[in-house]
Length: 151
Image (cartoon, rainbow, N blue to C red; front, side, top):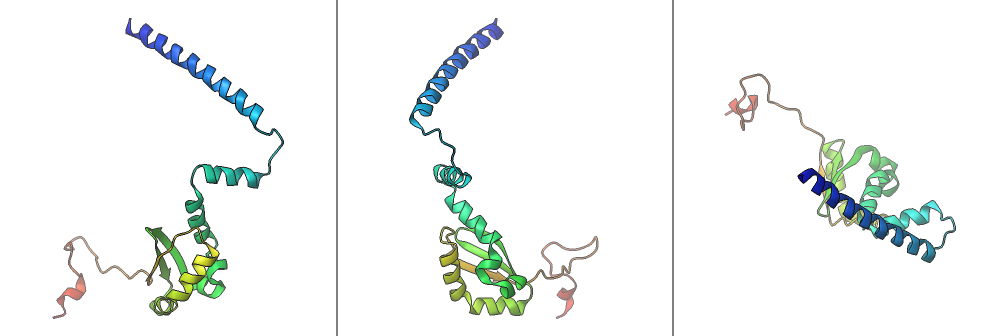
């Protein structure tokens, strides 16, 4: 008996939804221009309607990194993450990380002019990944590894 009640309720709401949807589509088709639109126009409308402009700007920052900073810097640096206005950039060496810290203000200006939608407030430069000193089955969590015995 409950199955029948559930089916009846479903059919009732579904038919009402179809009627509402068909009326809305008829009104929209009368109001809208039916001429074909360019893909750029359609995509820009979708991006604006769904508030994706910030995400698209941040994505373009990562994809256009070579054009933003230049070929030489881009070969030695890679943007890793952008969280809360902090862009983390990994360098190929600690020397490049130091050099980039010295150029931080210029790089922030360049990013703000070339990717204005990406809200970058701070740059964090990190060097390459250091080797792990934790080896073997009997390592101690939180210990420094084999260097811990030097004094």
